[in-house]
Image 1 (spheres, rainbow, N blue to C red):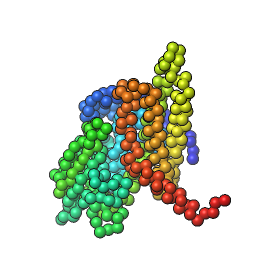
Image 2: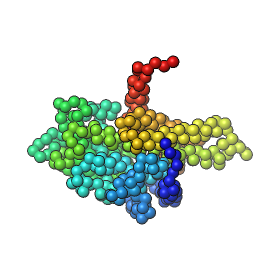
Image 3: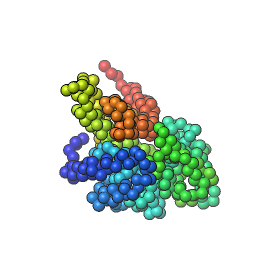
Image 4: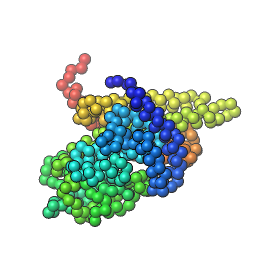
Length: 401
């Protein structure tokens, strides 16, 4: 594994870091105190600036207007953008659109790509991904209640979803629904494109997350599909391939999340360092003089670096050996980095004291919204069990002395 960063990527990252410091981080306060939709004018202005700098859509295909970066390079970029909750959106590589773009690019028909892919990568429209259900365990994605029944040339979809991220204002949803309940569990479901203006697509509410309902892209909706009829031409891939497509989406998606979390860790860490070096706790005595603070700093530095190297290794392995060969590494980084994230944010908030609890810094925002890192895309416990089983199986017939 080569840790050298090309001159091109060094330049790209420097430009992105400078843009984040000068153009993105300064508008975070507006983000805290206004709805996301209120920020669209200023965010669109920043997005146009990014496009003119030719830094738009870093991981997306060049033929559609993206930069075409591989997972390793996007890992470096994502750390820079992850420093702010607005970073990935401003640079056109935000979830859930990033994952939907991958699915459309890999499995979409020519007609589907013409209709959605170019506009999605260009930032003209947004999308959402509708998989999680209210009454079904997210830890077992083979258990779905939502159905898509053939009727003539259409599918008729019925079911209830929630945590459909960014449905508020989205152009279309990619819906996971059971198309053949008699098939083996992993062949029962399919992915179907549903335009959000289709009759029967009911956005019931933006779910309140830690006291914040959100709006626009920064929201998570409850959706009820009620006799929602779409053409069978809206099927993504082949019928029964829903779980295969989900893995194509979730593998890189988990790496993307971990890359972003490291950016958050680094931002929180730097805020902790600044606070420790500038906060007097007695005449002539700074907070940084206390050994417990020094211990937190050392532990955080080691954990962030370990997490960074683990994620880059997983990205490298997926790029060279494919997703199946990287299953263990993906599970490892998913729970490990999520927990590093929680610890670093908590230490930074504790170092700031009462200031950390307020919205005068970004730490309380990170503390509220990033707790979900240990839940979405597979809870910690499920990933740990999966890793442990693979490791145990590898050693089942080996004699260890």
